[in-house]
Length: 270
Image 1 (cartoon, rainbow, N blue to C red):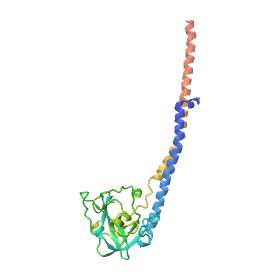
Image 2: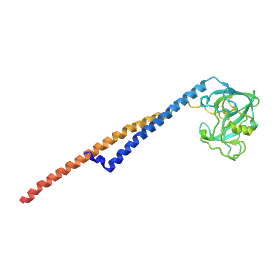
Image 3: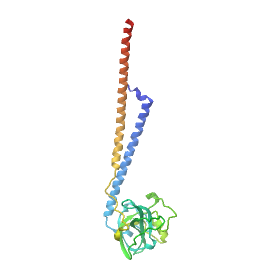
Image 4: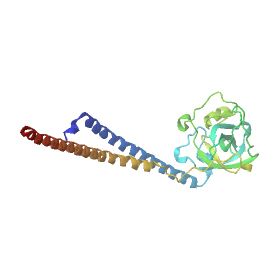
């Protein structure tokens, strides 16, 4: 009764199940690794945010690439804002998903050198070619506290670095680009300002990164692995149903044949 498994339909169905099982196992592990990465990232964020603040020059220097281990480290920088060379970073969203820009202002350090400071978000100008209304940076010497971030690139951020933008507008926060524009050395990476808080609420400072949510990746991994168990279970159910249907059809055929046989003598005697 299981010879039907050799039919074209059942061979294709069985092969499909054999392909789905390793595929879904791999998808489950892919989601599991994403879960592990998220947990590791949360631990890194929490550890670095809780670390004691250090001068920014202890963690970066001109041309330095900020390693992932130093992302979100709290740093301090004392100097004077160079508002003349301030730029805005296009297509950035606020905490409530409003489209605007980030304000990027060079800070000339007291002990020499320059570091880029992301002062936060402001609404974009109605005309995209116009420079938005940006609240002025504090005058005189100021000590900025913030989170250290790595330079943005198209590869790391997914943001295309467009050419021909209006004056003082950029797409990426990149110390090498700004160093060329400023014609002086700039520390690698940039500082995401948290203190001092701006008067009037603008620019809106960037929110603390989320270090508590682990996302749905573990749940997705479990779902894929449950699907793996469901494939052979479903195959067995279908096989048994096919076998039952064939046995029932065979039994009905036998009964009908016996009835026809019994009718023939009756017709003959008549």
